[in-house]
Image 1 (cartoon, rainbow, N blue to C red):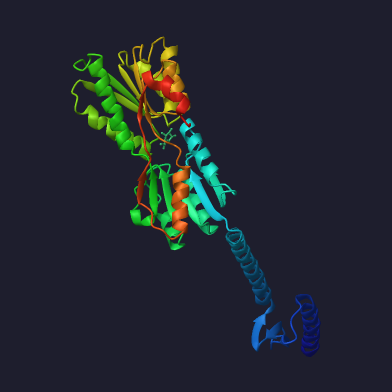
Image 2 (image 1 turned 90 degrees about the horizontal axis):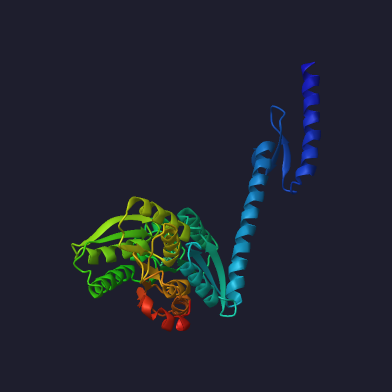
Length: 381
Ligand code: GYE
């Protein structure tokens, strides 16, 4: 009985083996063999493997083939953009929180056009650092030629900058600063935020003197920009450095309005509830100032050159000028968003193998309300 059973088992195994050879499509060099215990195996290149591991290795092979195809595709895409002569640029933008930001985005998009020889991958990171870091990693994977980073905050980019450096992709930091070591990026192009803050303070010194209020107690409130953003940090440091020189300047409070109109409005509402006597309000961008002015008016108070609260703003956008002309804002410290052409020139130089300056500042001025009407027609943003 044992013998007949073993015989049947062997015949069954051989038939099964033949079917499997047909299904798996083994090459001619593959051999079907029976193991002493009657299991069917396919032996190729003199190596015995059981059927399970053979099909597993087929899966692995398929996966590997897929990966190879993906790699080929990536190479094709890269050579597509280089063979067509286009410079592939990835730009990780902060978000779209303000009028200034929209002007800067437009300036970049106008520079990095197909007609100018670029392929631009633009990512609006919606003020979220994780989204921004993921966008940067993706640029590295996509093997772009250059990365432009407008950092949402100062810290936390070291690892992704190392990824770009290892992939030999130059990184140009624009607008806001980062704390990472300078060896991790090629150059930085933007504004001197501390100087902007100082200029705001110096304007106030002069204004209070003209108003003969330079020996009165002056109550000052600040609506800060986004937490951790170098534009907010620099403007605060610069203004406070001047404030420290004046014992009569009382810095009552500061709170973030996140560089938005709604943020400015909400913070001002809380300030108005808390403080009765406000002399000066510093808003770290125009959008915050627009929201704050609305809150001041709603509360039945006045602001601007003929009002109770002196309003200092930053950016000097077209709408900022209009608010000065309307009598709502006293002074606007310029922050130039038209960085596209400077960034474009820098990339062209790098592409030609030329050296570029590690730090490049944009030119900026201070615009008091009394000059707004005359200057507005000549403004580009
Ligand atoms: O002042 C503000 C924007 O980083 C300089 O960000 C920029 C600031 C600008 O949202 O309006």
